[in-house]
Length: 338
Ligand code: PAP
Image 1 (cartoon, helix red, strand yellow):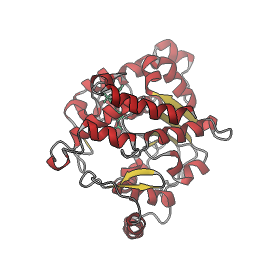
Image 2 (cartoon, rainbow, N blue to C red):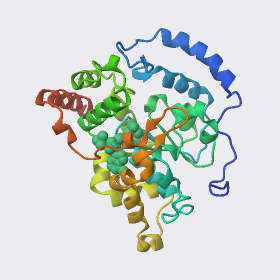
Image 3 (cartoon, rainbow, N blue to C red):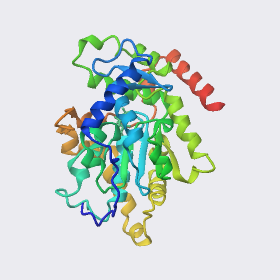
């Protein structure tokens, strides 16, 4: 991408940003973290701590604390926010396509990142890239993503009045997706077999102890922001199920919200429909890169295929018992009806 595509002049990294500074700050964060409630047992290497009501793996928590002080949003930035397993991969593909449609074309498979990378590698994920890939974070594309709850977003995002797109999903489907994902990520590790049972995952989810949980509080934070008189036009609140049922309507809505509405000429040419077709579950999951490639090949070496499982509504019915479903539904009623 050339810098003329998305002109920008300010760095997203503060003047004090740097790896030495991060290391020093981590010493300070260790002291803070040592006082926090710890989840027992946790996934090895992903020990979870409860910070101001939300559960985080330690390495993300350190970066989140560092970002509070050292991330500088540009006012034109748009943040894709979500809890885990609620449709982030799809939202990234759609918004990236909307944003870059004048630069990349479908027929140019050598050039279009979405045809050569998993959507997660097309734009920065703050909790990881802020430290491991700062150049990516500071690049010109005005799209960035995070799983951070609203109350823990770096203050500069709100101070700069940036736009936020949030996607949530039916809690039971989210839980099943998270369980299946965790099984794949940790399947080599026999020491976590007892945590990876469905029973244990339901318990954690209901107690709010899954990563970035409680899930319901995560959703409520963004829901309230989308209804805040001062911020409501800056927060677009989406549901995975709505996006699946009426994708065309929501893709146009996304484009308008992003201030990149489709022109009449584009609509006549069927550009929104092309974007939808390129980003749908079948197209993305059938791309060679998403079947055989690796996400963050240098560090994490997670298979891209892990981000594509079924992409359906109601898959929870195939796994959860009636009692499990009721337990989750009761919490949903209690949390969302008040
Ligand atoms: P993440 O938190 O790891 O980024 P995220 O993309 O938010 O995951 O959610 C993954 C879910 O989105 C998966 O749902 P499932 O387990 O119920 O199948 C995944 O299959 C689904 N998904 C991925 N890409 C698409 C897509 N293009 N359209 C619809 N659903 C999708």
